[in-house]
Length: 434
Image 1 (tube, rainbow, N blue to C red):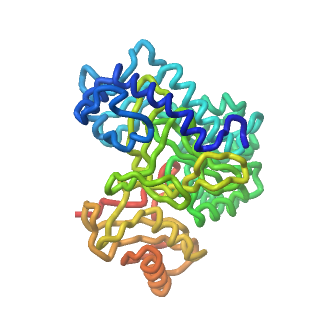
Image 2: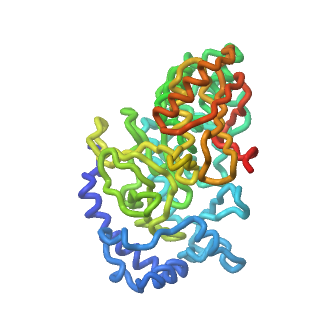
Image 3: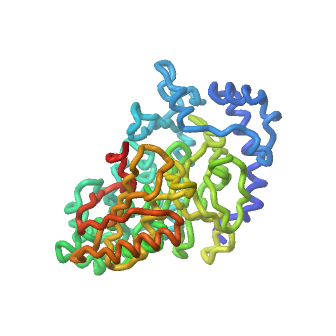
């Protein structure tokens, strides 16, 4: 067992008084939560109860936080600390409009760095290693990972996104042992190398830490990346409003360990009903987070929209925290004649077809809605040099029908047709939907 890694049951007992103190702080400093909890009939921390009563409190939604912003409250009415105490302000990408701002006090920042060092430490990152990364982390919460690398003692080589030649030059000349990127980009780099006759399996890279999107835990995508690079792949996962790299996978590669113990409490819920789901082996649901030690903009029962499969059994690494594998985002979900379809699950099933496909797919919904009438159009890219084959398309259709219970319309396209990315891949293309 790692130092300080108490049993999960003991951790819950330790979190109880911390959670109650956080509630006191919320009610005393957050206009947003004072009003929100009052509307639910809760005016004191005693009214709210302890962790065993947490499921009775209302959820917090991202849209609520956005709606709480105005000219007088540019961060939002959930800001619970004086701006004089804020030492860093990150922002989201702002793809839906005005960026959301995420403030941190000095203690908040230190806690986030500690969580990230645990996550990357689980993956085997250690002092003295050289690590090249492709994240444009500066203004975004991923910037905390830069602080975490420094605390671990890593020699960090930040290259940033959008310059594959510069990245591969750094790999060849500076001999890093670790590559940090999205799984989509790791796959893109493998294809880039094949096209140029570069054998990346013999480079110095022996660990690839992927994050930023589901995919690193998909067995077929992981196999393809590891085979191309001759390196072990582990993944990490976090969420900007709560903390970066909240989960980190160890060398056992059996899911990401929770790295936020003592700082964040998590629940599992049914994304459709909101009902709590017990934390046990094989449980599936959406992660919901509550800050335990946060000052600038603490959140209570924040819905992540990340759907995961849980594991709580012993891990050979000695860590006692539960593990998860992300199976998709509930806000990416498509429903085809009553069947829930996650785009990442479609990619995984198609990828297992074998060497005839590149692993790249694109789902093209006919209507701009969650519910879709069958068949669901799916573009599947062939491997380099593979010819069109209706038999292959039929096989893919049948495999998706057997494994995901979804009827699809498969269109095969030549290698290189679908776009590649140095960041997050978009598995659903809405441009042709009505």
